[in-house]
Amino acid sequence: MRTLRRAGYRSREVCGRFTLRRPGAEVAQHFALSEIPELTPRYNAAPGQAIAAVRAVEGRGLVLELRRWGLVPPWAPDPRIGGRLINARSETAAGRRAFAPALRARRCIVPADGFFEWGSRGGERVPFHVQVRGGALFGIAGLWEEWRGAGGEVVESCTLLTTGANERLRPLHDRMPAILDPGDYDRWLDPQERDPARVEILLRPFPSEAMEAAPVGPRVNRPELDDPACLEPAPEPLQRTLPF
Image (cartoon, rainbow, N blue to C red; front, side, top):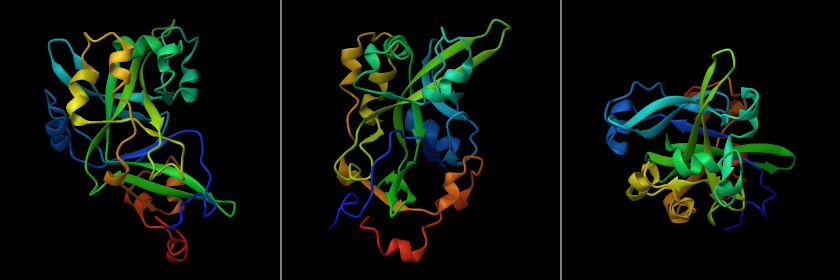
């Protein structure tokens, strides 16, 4: 089978859209939350928007909160920096001023059931919806912060960690979200674990054989659109030219 690279695709820099269509009860069960959250299905979650994040809270266990996607460190002069901090590279986060404190003490998990990546073919950008086989729920490693402005404004934010792409996705994109093994959730969220080296080893490419991807239509290119139509298949003529 031809690879996407041989078919004329090239990678981009960031992982910037995802889906979470599962109901709150299923999310609560998967992540062992202390309460069942009310969730609106997301078909095109985008940076700058409020997204679900799971973290450990003393006395409450694991809770799900809505946080702005794009990390705003406490030292930032204003929240606009979050637009440049939607992802953190797992290999270098421990050495970055924006991410190192959160990696030590403020880790979270972002629930998802798919994410989008774009390839380019003949000058046309083609979005792909990538998911664990069967559309299973999964958790992306994240970091969270709380920023307080001089006027009392509070911004609760988060970022998604990325790792090198697995073999299946590498021709499409050289990075992918750092999807955690469910058996590692507790360790990643443990507030007592402050050694970055002991949690960085949990951030590795998700197995290729457990993932699938399909091209979708251009509707997802518009972040203000968030509905089931974002997952409609790409036009049939394009489908026939793709190796996925």
